[in-house]
Length: 296
Ligand code: MN9
Image (cartoon, rainbow, N blue to C red; front, side, top):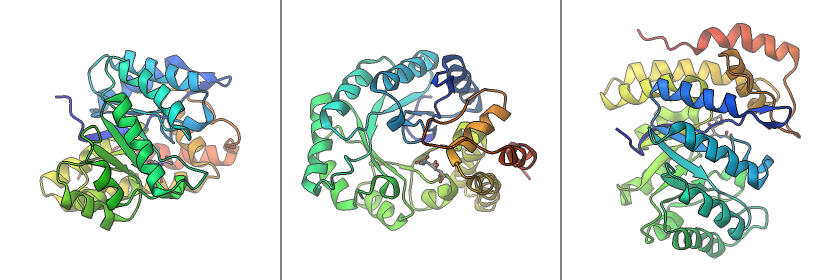
């Protein structure tokens, strides 16, 4: 059944000669549907949103929506620094068949006031009249969507949830406690189980691109009260994450891991740096064998 809870890979964007590699993107979508994911988060931070042109962001979403063909959910990230640019992406996304919600990081760089950040989201909600999922990622955006801000946004019926990429699980719990219907997606893959224990409904993550089965298994084990198993699988995922985080470019490492499962993803765009030959060897010898889910 299609649902907005569950595991959503934040799709990476494949390039071949610096152009969107459509066939690789379609292959990854298909591969992940076979893993049993609930949906995709398209053109977020992991999808290199801010390194793509506006037209490329639309193109990626169109390819994904076409390939998914209504089988699972799609959340389109439309975040930009300008409300009008976000709205343009939002109108495109909300009119595409198969897109279920839009999401956005807060407007950044100019240190917009809380009032301006709230207005940004209300403008999206009112002008799109479509489900909106604000994206709380203080570490990268520099802006925190606090429980108070989320409470205010929730007065608008189109604001249905939050993508929560923060390790402030107290905030997560406070948001859910005062508003149980708020959909909360955990954002840090390495702390998925912690997020679940503080009431996240699901997760959106970059490492789900190539090991969604592990996170689906963590979620199932958690729901059935098998916490020991959930912890063991989280540790398997974190062994992979730790190796990836040792490289100089996490994004490049993630793309290389997808190469290793047989889908050519290329390098991230400049100014991200490519992996060294040694880093590739490390990922191939150390990480590739760890990708397989091991159940006791
Ligand atoms: O929000 C992702 N964030 C980024 C989600 O990609 C910037 C996460 O999945 C992290 O990549 C992952 C590693 O820290 O948890």
